Length: 225
Image (cartoon, rainbow, N blue to C red; front, side, top):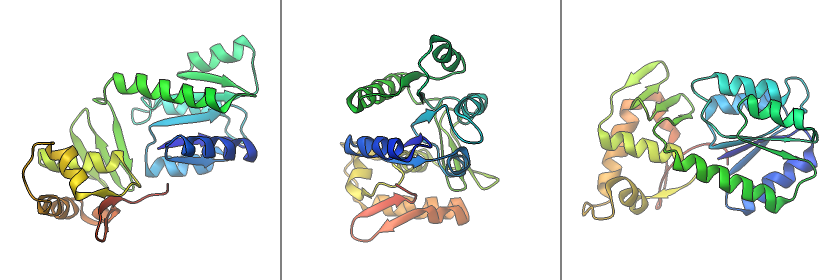
């Protein structure tokens, strides 16, 4: 999931369309308020952030993102009409991972996104943190919190929840879950997935309803796409 925060509607819609065409699940926001509300629900894999925003500007948002233990590892591309060296240095020194000035080419944007995601993935996900609804997961600490309660999960339950959260909004078949969570050589039946999903929902309490059953297909963690 990629979040794009850009107040210019035409630019925002162009970026969202381009990213979706490139195969990325994307949400667009016109201001910090709508962005922060969605950030409280789920963490993206990357953020494209305009500097010149109404109210809280991009630099203020960036500082908050990099100052929080939950969001500091999310890669950020700054997007702005400013092109002076000072503005670029200021953004990069504040924690931005890349910087694109307007006007820009869509192919360049997609190339920057791919490159940044590739670098992020190469660093490993041991420090990654995931969030959806009232569920928070720290992969580094092998910790899951539902609401304000820490939840004890088995290894496979943890990995199953992790995969569901990483693919929030995407319908995953039972065969896909078996392959990715239990391994290519696992010889169990798909009923194994159903049993673990049931256990996960029970342990997560009321938050467990975020794991939706897609009849005849499989499961997904609900959320906007």
